[in-house]
Length: 610
Image 1 (tube, rainbow, N blue to C red):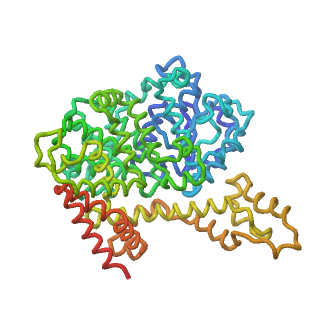
Image 2: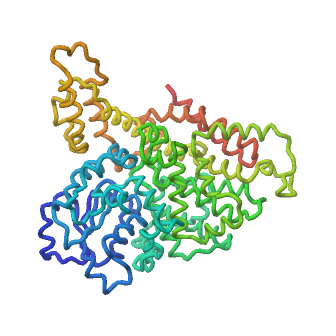
Image 3: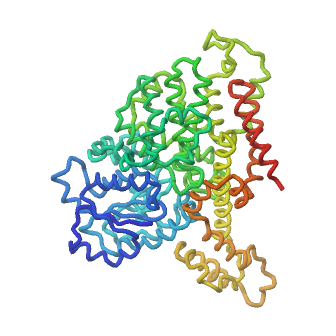
């Protein structure tokens, strides 16, 4: 769903008339009086769980920068405002244009972008890889896109409006840097724009809630957060923001690191806009769910350590930022297909390194005192190390570490005189990693009805991942019979998406290299039926509305509609969760409820296996 925003441009303005040929690609047109109104509109759309999440479409903002220069405290040049969008709305497909210079040819990329953003698999591919649009679709004559490959802004100023992980990383790396040659390009980001500082974020959440029968104001959020049956998937984005706010506000006060209410809300809104709402599992709800689990486990295990209040704050923050910008895939596929992101981190814990790098930069931007305090009291970066600990490739290492701990006679730990507390057998760095590791995979330890919801969502996201692999096969398979792809209407979207390179590769190039006489001697990796089936499967993914409805089905109805959930849960429990939580609970007996819940849930899934 795509939007065009006109900022203080009257409907009868002749500059708008020139853009009429492009209006058909937009689902709605919104007239606004300023940039605070723009952010308010975008935030409202996001927190209302609306169709307009700015991910399943592309949206553009048109305004006259000259009109604001003399009346605004903020620098509202096109260049600067596009950076404001990247800074505070990182994963949203938004771009700003100058109404004075933009003409229809400057927006020719929109059709291409809409094809990508309209399909889950195409989006995932684009997020991770950067060879689809930048080179083929950037108009070298476009006066609004003067950046070229290699200049200061090439990584986030190409014609496409679609989010890319490499752009996200590059932008935030340069937002907070000690290299003067780098910081010069982004030094105007040090100050938060006045129109964002003065926005009342709390009002965005409580707006239109006062007269609701089940107002979000009536909920006891601390009690809700204090229970292990925390129902993240039954809460709205608004409710999750309030839960997060309440917890972090309390922890920051206890840690003597208070943050102004409006600044904390801005941080949380920025975090929410750093997660993909279109992801089934790895989204803001998962982030808040892991933060709740992390905090709950921390309260049961960290209280005997020095500085335990700030430890709980830092670890809870690490949890809410631990999957920031997650594409819904895994490290294997990112490294396998040679993405720029994988090269940045040398194919090692790529996603986790991406998450921790960008999140720490974001915190340094919006809560710098927190980072300073962390560095002053700890000899390690707790946020970085905690997020890196969520790499599933390290899973067996943690199980082995726990077995080693459990086989070691209990001895007094140097950090405390209380040798009776079992968790003192575990050093702080290890315990920090174990807590967030446990929280990250804790959905199988939740009560059955909540655990089943997460099982449903991870099953869907895993299905998307399988389809993405099929898509890679379509792209890379060039040894195809010249008779394939006769029905080009079946793959029109693919041909448009890839700028016709798939059609050219699969037909022209291969036909030129194939003689009619030696067809029988050729071998082909893909048949026409397989190719068409894969394309149709990619195009028939369930909508977000369907998913949001199905997640509230009864447990029996959910299993009947999605029977693969059963084997998926049994596989994950038997392969990963059971052994880890059994050893974790042995090391920390106060956490026995985790292994007890897993056993109960496993028994249920076994009873449903046919």
